[in-house]
Image (tube, rainbow, N blue to C red; front, side, top):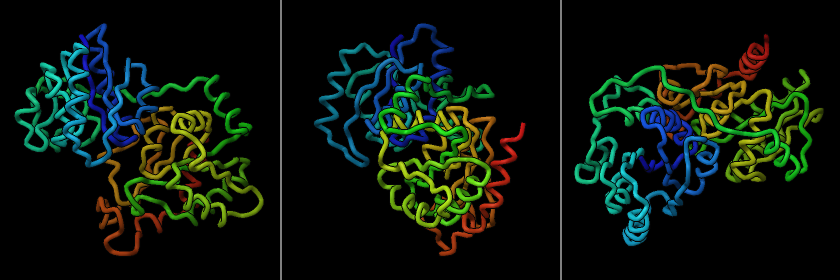
Length: 338
């Protein structure tokens, strides 16, 4: 059997798709499972042993590009795929498997994709409250119950890879490394305030931790603000925008503690089995929790949250402003206890 996964366009969602990949291999021994994925999530798929090859999807968010999709589909038509699992619910994500004449095209009905998806699942959000469960459901027959528990995501990072990453970045690994991931691609309503991260860095520094800040170039301004607000004794090291995603994965794998907003790197940290403190504001830990027994979720669960908005519609962001650094520090230290 040779099958293709049409992967999500978000790092966290891609991590949450790994239980589906694991289930497919359980169901079909000897399966070759490839992934059609945007290049910005490819480094995550490269760390999954279930994925054999990655086919580059060069299309930006919202980019239809029918001619380019048709050209890519015709190339895939010669690859012998018997099944395609279409994870995004958009119409355009189902076009390439259809144009490539892949016989079984599996996914949720989504945006009226009745002609494009021919093994159709209908989503019951009550039965499948988590995103990872919705992805994993595609391994089952339409209408069949989802076996639980799901396998947990597990990304690979080798000691040699971590050493190479540190050498490339001219970094020496400290004995007690705390990684902060202060960004969140979706918007500021998912970001714990910079002043809180700065105070937490000071408090963890008093316990002997060295703090590194990881994220994309877009996260550099908030990381610079954290450094500016932190005490001078042990300033955090701002690595936002200085690493590739693959290097960030290796540095997170080397950490003894990770503190994250609800973001793609949060799910990466969970899949690397790191000790993780996950901070939730406008989003819901019921829908996209970190799938790890070593994760502690902190959410004030205010009446106004989760609102799922990019910016606080009430203008106060109490769900994160009132989540005190001392509360997060207590979770960090409690997790560190034997």
